[in-house]
Image 1 (tube, rainbow, N blue to C red):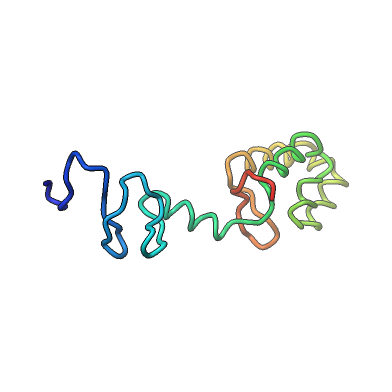
Image 2: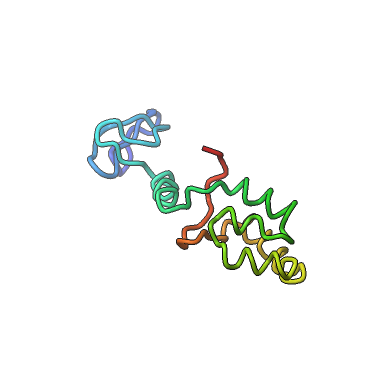
Length: 120
C-alpha cells in the first residue's frame, strides 16, 4: 500500500468528495455523482459555456467572416451589422474573430465562451 491507502497494483482509487472506492478509470463517482480529477474542471467549464456550437461559429467565420454571420449566430446582432457594413472591419476583425473562435476565447451575447464543438 502507498501513502494514500491504495494498492499500487490495483485498479481502484478513492473519490475526492465522498471517499468511496471507485475504479481507477472512472471519471464520475458512482456513489455521489461528482466528477473526478481533471474531468471535474472540464465539466464545470462546460456548464458555464454557451449553448452555441463552436464548430458552427468557426465554419461561419471561415466562410462568411467578412459578412459577420458568425456574430449573428451568437446573437451579437449589433456587431454583426457593423461587420456586414464594414466587411468584417476591413478583414482584420474577421481574422481576429476566426482566431478567437478557434482558440475558445470568443463569447456569445451573454459573455459565455463558445467551448462545445458538438451540434445539439
